[in-house]
Length: 367
Ligand code: APR
Ligand code: ZN
Ligand code: ZN
Image (cartoon, rainbow, N blue to C red; front, top):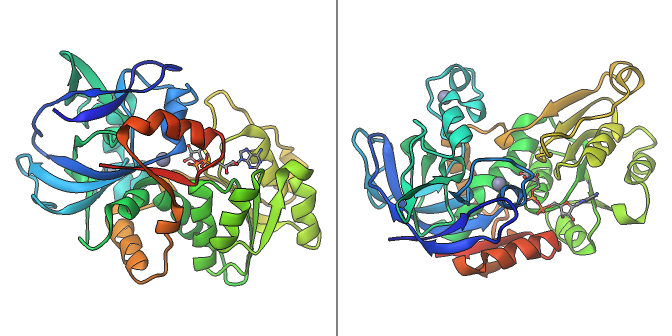
């Protein structure tokens, strides 16, 4: 009986309880979690920003060890260390075949139901089915995931660091290296320097950006941004960040600007601070009712701007996860520096509070 952090309903505190876990079915694996990062999207489910069916086991940024494999699984075996992908990528569907595995069709039912790929459930609490966030459910000592969502990594990557690859790093680093087209010498702006935004910053430097202008409201986040490679810091609580970025770029704007929060006003700022002919990359997940107010002619057409959404860093998890683990082992990717606090599963409500208060880049649950 694993212990798991369950979101019972929107707005309710998370309950950490014993749950039942059925055995893996064909094409599934049972994973004993080593660690799970606490990402803003977990909070977004608890506070209703992301509306999904409840109750469910939260958590989607995890790494662990394969304990058991279901019938027909051949990509991983018992004892393998894996990063869990919250978009299992099948390799066969239209999107996987078009090198857009982050949009894999096989994940659609799981996303809609919080179940596994066929929409059925493996977790139960007192005989009642429990969903699991994004076919993951990493706020649990153990979980069942599709084998296509378990990506093997080398055993020498510590679990706390490996877990972060699963969401924040794939999303942020991927936004800069896959979704955007950053060229050598570019000037990049990043609004929102949390767990995901810091990875956009290090990804932008990796992709060749010469200047990275980091925008946040919290001085501690701007300090971290500098550590992750930002060259210029803008405190958005001290006045309009758009005019500050324009002043830093000869009034031209950034070659590529990223929004990594998910708020309408900051998305509009991101588009406004993008130069003519540049790219605005929208990474943060907004509330579903958010609409954009952008001048179509003067703001987009005349300026030939590209506005591009970013889902899961446009990552192919089967190639990008091992690549990121290798970059970490070679000292080219910062992961340990993202871990502000190592916590216990029981501390997850406090981790949400700390995230809202802007105290942490990442809290990581260590099992
Ligand atoms: N202007 C500038 N910075 C802001 C503003 C604002 N108006 N509002 C919030 N921020 C900063 C916060 O100070 C924080 O540093 O945005 C950052 C958000 O970081 P986190 O809360 O750590 O969120 P993170 O996990 O990085 O996720 C960011 O990406 O994957 C999605 O769902 C996720 O939408 C969320 C986004
Ligand atoms: Zn697919
Ligand atoms: Zn996440």
